[in-house]
Image (cartoon, rainbow, N blue to C red):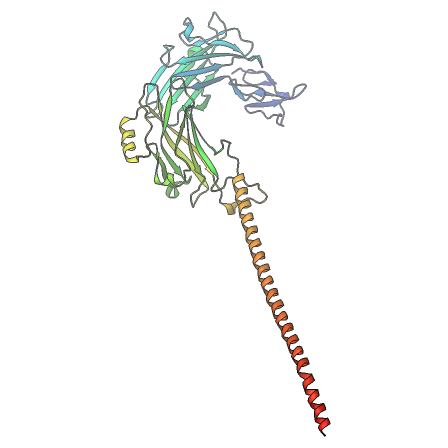
Length: 425
């Protein structure tokens, strides 16, 4: 840090105090201070570790793979020096290569260093925690291509391999020979030889709301193809996302095969593709006491020479014994979670997912069919009733007509008899 004169501040004394704004920049500064500038306000990065329009990018970044570091350094411009692994300035294999981005003209220095490359990469077991292994190296950013100067600074890169598999980069502006007091300025990424996501069954990302019964899939894909060639999903647990006495965990995949609980939700066998990737199709579900469903899975990642035979889940008992006795490779843990709503928890005005809309359409069609059946039955009853009434009227009319005819036929003989009676008198 500089000892700034009055009216200036910042790690390099490059910020005039009277230009600092109390309102945020657009976009807001992520790791800096907004100050007035022409034609628009800018961000002054409060640490030498960041750069970019919003101070959103780090000057030192590391990506860790199963057998190597990938380290990128973006020096302060203008830079005419050299970047190399400390103590290996004359070793070309330990030098960083200058790279210029064709789109942004950003100058950076990059190196891919294998852990066994001999470039002063340290391996320490049980550090920083038991059962963790740390690979680390120190990188010198030399201000001069020839001399060591007081403006040189150092980057410490470390990959920590454990269940969480964090990688850390430490960077700070200190004289090279004083790095025992290296300032704490760290960033973390995640080493993922296998990437795990939960998606809709058609491969699309899940967008809320998500309802019970929606077709989904657990999707695993191998990302570190430099070291590994294939992998297996060994075990998977579904967890309700609660803590302490309310926590609940159910095994849905064991030794590479669905358990009884898993088979109740899976809609197909576990599918292994040539990518290589693994897909586990299922209908979304939830625990009675929580909408959160977390998945914690153990995957076995294999090198080309490893014996990784897929289990035969059609003969589950034998395949489990085979998986336990013959499996080789390295195990990693992957996790993910989803939030599942019950149908009654539909948000007012919210759009239902396609599968829920289809369910409602089916229910509506069913109701319409029932209404039609009721109408048909009522019409049939009405027709029968009208037929009965018509029949009754017809019978009544016929009977009345028959009586009239009978009366007309019987009347003349009676009159003739009366005439005869009168004549006889």
